[in-house]
Amino acid sequence: MITQKINGVVNAKILDPNSGSISAPSRIDFDGKRIDSITPHSQTSPASGLDGYYDAEGAIVMPGLVDSHVHITANTAGLSDLGHQSPSYNAATAFRAMEDSLLRGFTTLRDAGGADFGFYQAIQDDLVTAPHLYFAGKSISQTGGHADMRGPGTHTLDEHPCCPHMGVVCDGADEVRKAAREQLRTGAHHLKIMLSGGVASPTDRIDSTQFSDAEIIAAVEEASSANRYVLGHAYTAKSINRGLRLGVRSIEHGNFLDEESVDLFLENDAFLVPTLITYYRLKEDGLANGLPAGSLDKLDEVLEAGLSGLKLASDKGVNIAYGSDLLGDMRDWQNKEFEIRSRVQKPLDLIRSATVNAAKLLMAEGEIGEVVEGCYADLLIMNGNPLDDISLLVNPSTGINSVISKGSHVSRDSHAAGLCED
Image: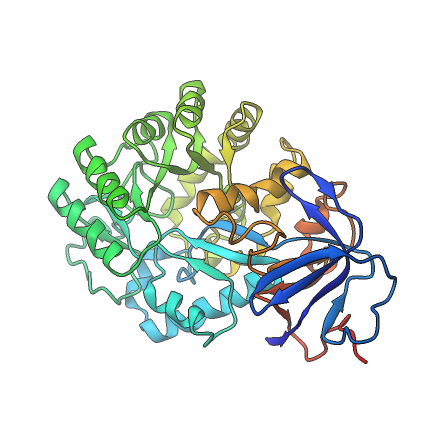
């Protein structure tokens, strides 16, 4: 991947995801990795002295996208196999996955279990080219829960902190509290707990309810004490509603939510992060990507419920963020979540889910999700208007002209098209 530091962007019509408005042509000046100022700029070509600027030529410029549910270390859908990989090999595949996400327009990723402080530190120290990363450390699961990847005949669990297993198994409020503190000790931005069964785990049912009230409260208390929050994996209305009542701020998947769920989301200003694309791709490509055959039977239970749940939540004004949850080579389909959601949501709502809504969820307002002074200079130069045609984001290779991340133009080749030169 090639990066080239630039001074800013000129002739940019800025899309504001809050209002849905598009500005007159503007000049965006950078100060290192952040936006320093935004001023009117109506010239068709830059004036002398503006070398090192990207000329958007009147194109729409929008904030970089945020995927709020990824697993950068999950290079296979056979999650039980991750613990057998070398951590260095797993890290290499994770950095490649983040590069690919960046080129698809995702300038920020929230990892929902698996990524650790080492990935975050490497990005902060500019050792790699990657999106901003918000990480959870290891997911917290009960014995036999969604992050317990042992088969029924396996009794040994390698919980070494640097092994690529995505979860830690604990039982009882005290063990949950300690596991939460361990993740927070490493700098985790949020905690991930399992509130129900899942597709990829070998020994639980989708409709199972996981962790006791006391265990969930322990995680929520520890996150709150550290000014962090808890995201909960949950499918059934029972597990969703229980988590929301006990202080879980972000529900992942949430396919079987009900009217009571909607009321609780609104009452608690909580977030829903649907991940519809992963079920479609697991159905098509799961076996080829390592998904155990037994997990395929679980897919039919969640595949169709997701869209109706999303529509109900969207129509009632629930906070909704964009998530993909794709594993292995299926991560190439990351942008197709826009296409699936477009069946029940308008383009502006979809754009908000991947920008301003996500920034609020990540507690990163004023940092990401908008093109405003002080935010990181994470921009997409579009080949059209995504408010009229969401396929521009569904198909980034043709819909996105250029990606700018932290004030640098990024591309796979050595020519940063559109840069102004004296």
